[in-house]
Length: 413
Ligand SMILES: Cc1cc2nc3c(=O)[nH]c(=O)nc-3n(C[C@H](O)[C@H](O)[C@H](O)COP(=O)(O)O)c2cc1C
Image 1 (cartoon, rainbow, N blue to C red):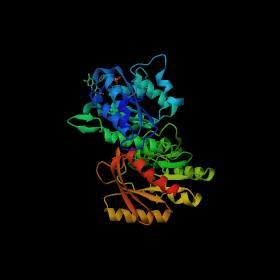
Image 2: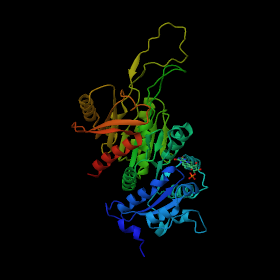
Image 3: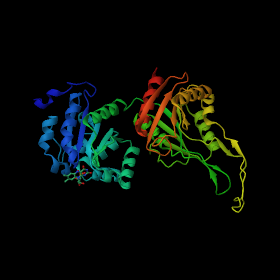
Image 4: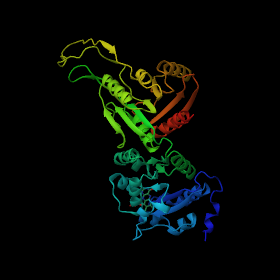
């Protein structure tokens, strides 16, 4: 007999039709919103199976989620090994959504600890390649704790999608059920749309030595390139990253070629493009435009009043991509500083035509809170004919997905 609570299934959309979603609920006070989240997923076609930690059961009773989902709730692991059963066969889940996720559970997942129902489900899902989305909720002071921040980054690097909380009244509150629903839908839709694609990404700054101790470099952190690499992998692509010394840690399943100077970056890109076919190349590195014309073998004397450095133009890596591999789709980044949108679009289109780029992601690194080093970005996507679309300020991981949506749509047509 079908549980009467399931009568809402598919009433508002079919995007999740036929999808089994495990809803992990942990001991945040926002657990009271889990029923609404389950019901929204069901209204869009999903079959939802709730799993609760003991912490969650101190906040809400499992009966609420059994009523909401119309399915039995897992409150402990038994001889049925529920956390393994859901990774294979008929019971295989399409997505695991942990909403809300506590600081405690985030820390455990980041350290590979499996001592609750939800952490065991997440570990099995990670091993089985089942997509995972988490929606944190906690006091603001906890979210900005450096260890929790680091843990969240670790989870993103492992391919877990984060639904950023809403900061209100000193709390990092669980995002709304509607936003969680949208992210769950897009995570499932994008799961495999880059399957079989080979992607080459350059990222990070380059460093150009002046003498044995001094270098010329720039403020690039590599975060945008790493976000793009992670998104490509999540969407099923194979990624090679040619990476300067950025601070962001590349995803573990990318093949990473580490380089220091612009010349080394060029040599690595040329080697990759001539030995393998790439469907997509993304030039996100901030390779130095200029390097010292001459390297001083000995450290320059620090007592000198003036030192004159002669700089020479470094090789332009993006110019080589289409020369070596004309059929590779090329997305380039163009950083501008304090220019108008009109000017940014016209410069981006011009540069795109010069290097035969298929798309240019232009951003103004002079604006506060976006671009170099920050967690967010704001981009204008320009095609070589000057047609543009703005991607408003968002976390670099969200911008990466928006950029890839455009790239994939164009590659497919
Ligand atoms: C009423 C109440 C509300 C709580 N809310 C939160 C919360 O919003 N976020 C959080 O990280 N921890 C919260 N906690 C603390 C967690 O419940 C605690 O860390 C617990 O060990 C989490 O276990 P779990 O992650 O296995 O569910 C709350 C505790 C109580 C008693």
